[in-house]
Length: 140
Image 1 (tube, rainbow, N blue to C red):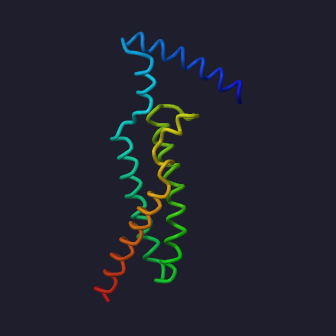
Image 2 (cartoon, rainbow, N blue to C red; image 1 turned 135 degrees about the vertical axis):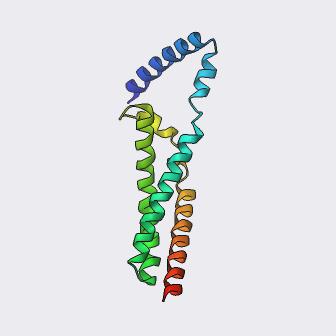
């Protein structure tokens, strides 16, 4: 791994020099630009996954008792966080046009906010459950 990292860093240094020269900026500016992500893509990932998640949560809640809904909320929320990370990685692969993200996968925000995303998906699950159970009570 040490040899790989050395060769990768040498290659990246050359690449950054070339890009900096071609665009009339410093190597540091090019390196810093690597940390910026397109907000629209990350927003699209989150919104599209939230829509899928809410739809799936509704299906689960419709087929569950109240007690099972409580239990499943923990399980489904945990699974959803992992599925969402896979979804974010897939979208990043499509965006970059490669199936191999390597160290670029670390730039995807999803993997840096597990607890926040878990809480958000749990809240969304319970909002879906409340809406579903209220509809059931009104119709009954």
